[in-house]
Image (cartoon, rainbow, N blue to C red):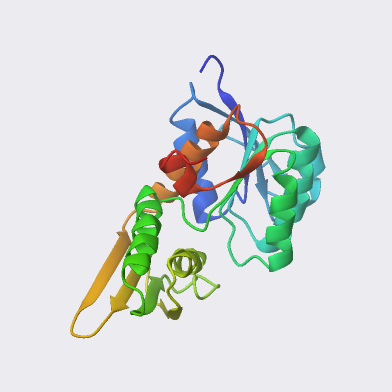
Length: 241
């Protein structure tokens, strides 16, 4: 890579946004953060050389190549419109989206590279692959997905649980869901397939939130220079997209 990718971080005041800022700053040869966007007016306009903007000022951000988004659902569509206007790729991990918002993502993908994922962990991408294969190999088995997160997480079931459920459905299973909110749990997902006299459990546990931020940055780097389209973590990992 000859020059750093110009990066916009959307949702910069949240946990994921802060992790993205820190990790991108640690790799100046790879990333140059040109704008950080927060929901409300920022307390400081420039922090460690990075200009901050309120969401209402989104149209005034400087030129960027890639946007990485971990914000709230109501901020997604303005960001999609901006990325389309600027011909910049978008990586989004915002969860709790309505069907119409997923439709807007698909529409944007006709013009720019877009990757939306509920979870940017490489391990979760592998788990989804295993869940689909296991469900297909075990027709008729009961399928349950149990997820646990910190007490501040709003959406339930988690976006990751729903994505794992979609993988199970692709394999022919009919998943049921249970959600726990407790303490400071980063993220745990258990997929159980139960038959007569035996059961299979597939589990992923995250202990460091940085894995999600790192995965999102890696996804943005992989998308740089790719044609418009709707990409997935599984597709990037397994060479399908």
